[in-house]
Image 1 (tube, rainbow, N blue to C red):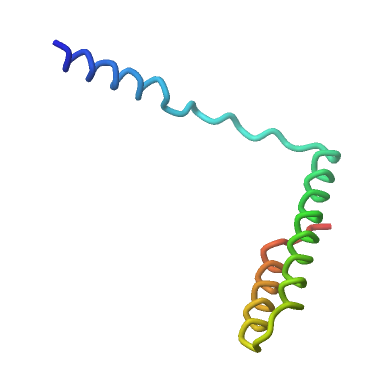
Image 2: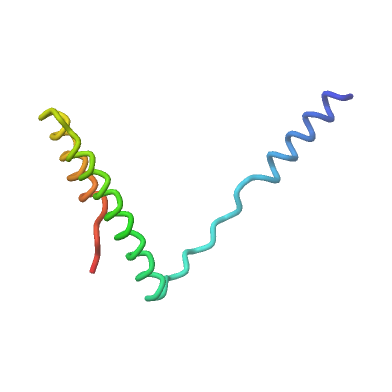
Length: 82
């Protein structure tokens, strides 16, 4: 019947898209690690500039405190390992 055909199709489709067993991570070489650190640093600088710009436009003490809290959180989130 049409219903059985639909159920079979859906079941087979779900089975075919199940994730494969992940391969073990390959260690990154030094160049890749440096590239990742560079990207992380660029992202940190960009977001920090955005937050400082918001801080300069903030008018109330509460706004400034919230932005400074975001700056501290962002600094904690982005950790640099040298």
